[in-house]
Length: 271
Image 1 (tube, rainbow, N blue to C red):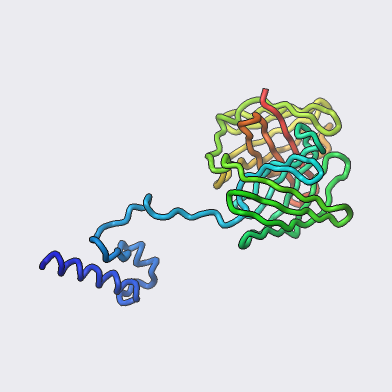
Image 2 (image 1 turned 90 degrees about the vertical axis):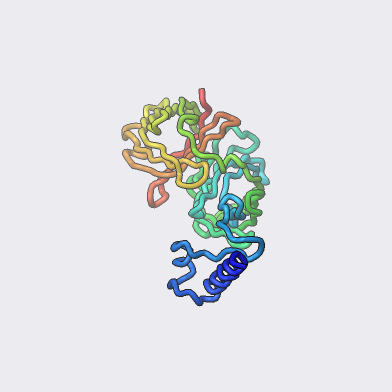
């Protein structure tokens, strides 16, 4: 009888908490004070947090790889803050970086939209304003259409890359990378395990910078400073993102100024 009575009292206390009979100011305060209600079924005890359902993604956040309808390869990120960084290749040549699609979008119930898209094309088209409308299935697919003001739209399809769920590893990224600019100048970038970056191109431009893990997702935050002289960016400081594709040993990186009028794009393969 004593055990049954105790159990009943505990259940009544739990029901009292749920119905507001025990004053804590708010349910959150009750929980933080250790007064969370317990189930009244088979006994009294604390819940094991690891056994509780984990939250599932509800947005287009993730790392995505795919193609456009014109034969370009795309690879990039949609981050937890809604910003997206989608690299695209030359037509029918995934080894040549042609540009970056960047902006901030909104995810809602499987639909994705962005009104501040900019296309940083390095094959002569320059910086173009656009919008994106698309659809997504969290952690599965992300499809969209990029609508330009002065040129034909471009559509893309992509699938989720689970590597996004890994932890950024600067030791894995550390190394020397070589890439080719659209003007056929070679670019060499070296990253060490502490996140320090240095680079130079065959036309004499130099760059230094730092890399650090993004707070969420397998993404890297990057800051670069140009050395002036041969650099068309002068001595500007740009910030952006980077990620390492372990399957291809490639480092993707992009940085912009605050006005998004100057860019640094690099795709290199580890030597």
